[in-house]
Amino acid sequence: MSLVVLPVPLRRALRISLLTLHLAWGVILAGLIFPLLTLTQRNRRIMAWARRLLRILGVQLRSDAAPSLPGGALLVCNHVSWLDIYLIYAAQRVHFVSKAEVRNWPVAGWLARKTGTLFIERGRRADTARINVEMRALMQSGAWVAVFPEGTTSDGRRLRRFMPSLLQPAVELNCPVVPAALRYSTLDGGYSAAPAYIDDLTMWQSLRNIISEPGLIADLQFGDPLLPNGHRRELAARAQAATATLLGLRVPETEPADTAPQTPAGPPA
Image (cartoon, rainbow, N blue to C red):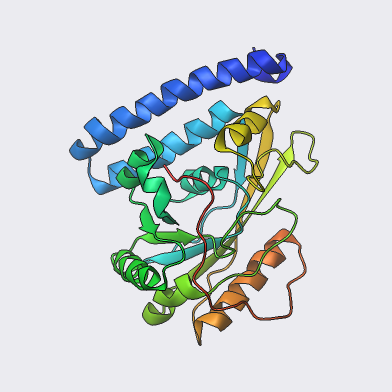
């Protein structure tokens, strides 16, 4: 029977039960099975795990194919929810840059480490330089790195300025920057605020909002890759304009500030 027709309390209970089992499988997968797999096999398992998570939460992903590139890339995307991380994982294997606090979270922090997340100390400019070195090494090896240049989440109906500090590795390597755009809607196509992880919402409250819905639709679009041809501020402005175009939003006319970013609100795992 479809969970859509169930009463909200029963729908929540079933999804929480399935989610608990799925997290347990994630721990087994990352702790016991990953060491036996090749890099390609691990990447496939991570993407499959994310797709299954979305199904459990009642989220239908509609995604373009990510651009086919011969080497590494930097993915930049608007940021609405911790759920964004798993939507991107489901479509493209990336290494996220996340706030350092996530590293110490029970289960989620451990899973984040196992999936290759990079952790940055917010508010420390020197740590941005360290992260840029790690990002550069990954992209040189052919991997994709993903950042949320807005530095925080929004309700999904607007786009904040893209801060350029974490775009520096792409400038130094002349590496493609792939703009992406996420939007969430209800099953009947209307705007949904349920996934928005904003204000003083706790992780549990955010999760509860999502699993209470009959279902959600998440649209993930990829833009054409951008090649750096100037300062990182210019690249940030171009990436922001490309993302705004994908979202159908107006681009602010002023340049983004060149400051160290905040980091994703949600825990990549």
